[in-house]
Length: 487
Image (cartoon, rainbow, N blue to C red; front, side, top):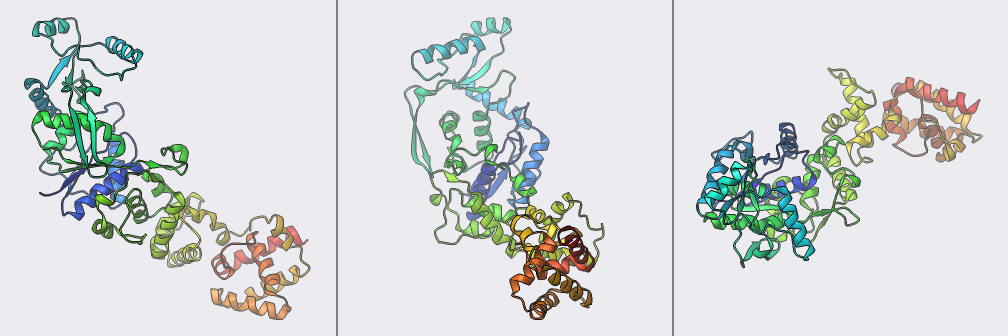
C-alpha cells in the first residue's frame, strides 16, 4: 500500500503554528514511507474563505520548505483541489446516500431545532437532532417545499452502535452512536458540511492516513459512519495533541505570535521553526535536538507522537533559532537583517557597493552571537551606526565622572586619528597601548571609551564597534560626549 496523506487547511486566515505542525507531520510521514503528500483547500466557508488567505498559507508552507507532491498550484490526477470546485462530486455522493437510505431531507426550521435543543437540555440530555423528518412521505416533503422551506440533508445515524476508531496515537477510541443524533451533511444552500466533504475528498483522493489535530477527534465518528455507509475503507487516523501555552492554556493571540508569518517577519529561520514544531508532541529516540528536514523524515514515526499536550516554549524556540543563526553564513543573515534595518531608515543603495556589503557583514558578525532572531538587529544597530551616542544613565553616567576620563578620551582621539586604518586588530592594539601609557587598569580605560561611544556599559566588543562606526562617527561621538558631560 502506498502511503497517501494530506493537509487540508481552511483558507480563512494565516497558517498557524498548529496547522504548520499538522502539515509537517503529514509531510514527514509521506517522506518516511516514500508516499504522496497532498495539499488541498477546504474553502466552503464562503463568507470567511479567501484566495488571499489560501495563497498566504501556501507561501508559508513553501517558506518552511514543506513541498507537496499533488494539490493546489501543483496539480495531479485527483483534482480539483478546492472544495468549491468539487460541488458536483458532493452532489453525486449525496444522492448515493439518499438513495441507499443513509441520508434524508430535513425541513425543520431554526425555531423548531432551538425548541428541541432547549427541551433536551431541560431533561439533562445532550442536545441532538431527534429525527423528526426521518420518515417524511413524498407528499409531506412536497407540502413543506410548497410552504417555501429549503431542506438540509441529514445523515441517518444508526441506533445502538459502538463506533470504534483505531487511532495510531490514542489507541482504540469508542463513541456511542446514540449520543450523536442525525447530523447535517449538506446545508440548505447546497454547500456540504466539513464532515461530509472531507470524507468524499479523502475517498476520491485515496487517503490512507489522516494525521490531524486532536480537536478533530470528536468529528471522527461522524466521518467513520459515512465511510461505512458508502462501503469504502476507513483510513488510519492519528490525532496529535493540542499545543498549549506555558501556563497550560490553549495558545491564543494573547500569548503572542501564533501564525507562521509572524515568525517569518521577525526574522526566525525556517529550518529553526521546522525543527521546533517537529518536537511539539513528537520525541525522537535519541538525545539529539537539532534536525534538518531530511533527518526529521528519516527519524519520524507515529508511535513516538505523544498523547499529552505539547507546550509552546518561546525560550526553546529562541534557543533552536540561535543555533541556526550561528550555522548560517553572514551573507544570508545580512539579507534577513535588511528589512529590519530598513524599518530604522537604514537603506543600502539599490546596487549595494562592496563597501556597504562589507559593513553589513561586519555588523552581522559582531552581533550574531548575541541575537535570537533577526529583528533583534534593531536593538544593536545604535552601537554601530550614526554619529550620536545614546544618553548614558545611572552607572554609565557615573563612569564619565571619573577623574581620568578627560585624559582617556583625549588620548583615545589622538590614537584613532593617527591610525592608518581602524580594524579590529588595530583597535585592540591602541587600547592596550593606552592602558600602558596612562598606567591605568583596563576597566578605567575601556569603560569610559565604551560609554562615550555608546552611552552604555555593556554590548558588543569595542574592537567590533569602532571599525564599523568609522573615524568620523567615532570622533563626533566623543566630541558630543565631551560637550554634554565633561564641560
